[in-house]
Length: 92
Image 1 (cartoon, one colour):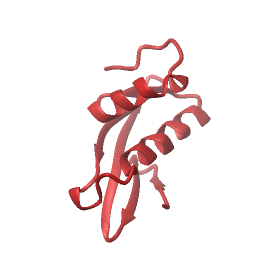
Image 2 (cartoon, rainbow, N blue to C red):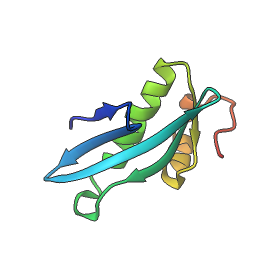
Image 3 (cartoon, helix red, strand yellow):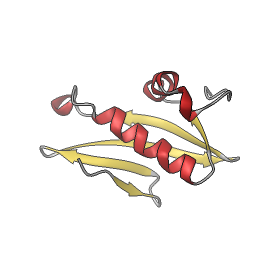
Image 4 (cartoon, rainbow, N blue to C red):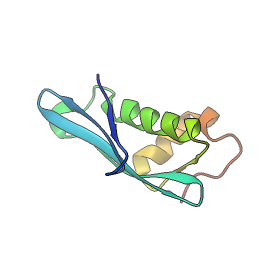
């Protein structure tokens, strides 16, 4: 699966079987905050949301940004992957 980052639009996206899933984010005060994770029902259940969120947080860490989450899916993802947050409080 190819994940494309559009920093101008602040979106990570992928298209599978003609349907596009995406994560949008904001960067503020050194935090990389995932606002929404959207995967159309036609392509749910394939791990797409997880891969999009992982790609976004990998980008955050590579750019010395603190992972944060407003999106409920991203909050759960960070709870399952504590290596991305260490001892930091990520929940907005």
